Image (cartoon, rainbow, N blue to C red):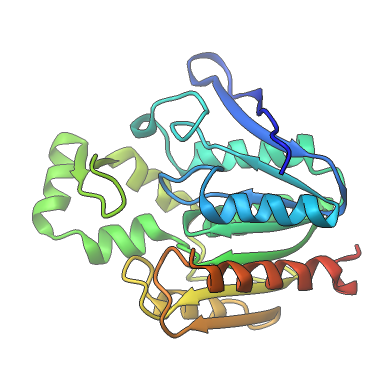
Length: 262
């Protein structure tokens, strides 16, 4: 794959101005917009595989790093879902000028859903592929289930808690602002209708986003064309060769489907 250098765009104003790194490779429609997970960036295994597939098949592919992630500016613990959604919206508006399939992993699945709701009137979202979508994760997966009383008390008292990570030696900080802001974007308790084909890929052995959580999202989409693929031995990352193959086949199906022509 030919190397491409990211460009930087400004998002926000004043003290909340962030430099967001964007890697946009031209191609035909429908384009692809990659939305990374929490503490992940656009150079991960799945993101790189998607970029390579898009270039090989001539599709436009846009990737970016949220503020506090990867090559973008900003401090991770100062950001929240509203910031990351604003950045995703800015990238979508500037670079996705035709039908686009949103491909979101973990938190990126939630961001993809929020973005599709926010930009529904543009008719540019052609479909979604969601990998272990962590919809409403700040409330449903963290606050209500993963956090015990001691952790919740620490966050309320100190405004932050350092959470150990299975994927890095460094802990990541969960702030009270992140939790409270996440409550502004909760969608699982409503019936959602996008009028788009949606594919959900989920590992049955995912301990971060249990398959029951993804199934709950399916139940919130009774009127949409949803394909739910449960990988029996799959974990949260779904980054093995066979998982990547499933992802790319799912993207190809949506990219080539007549239902993506809007």
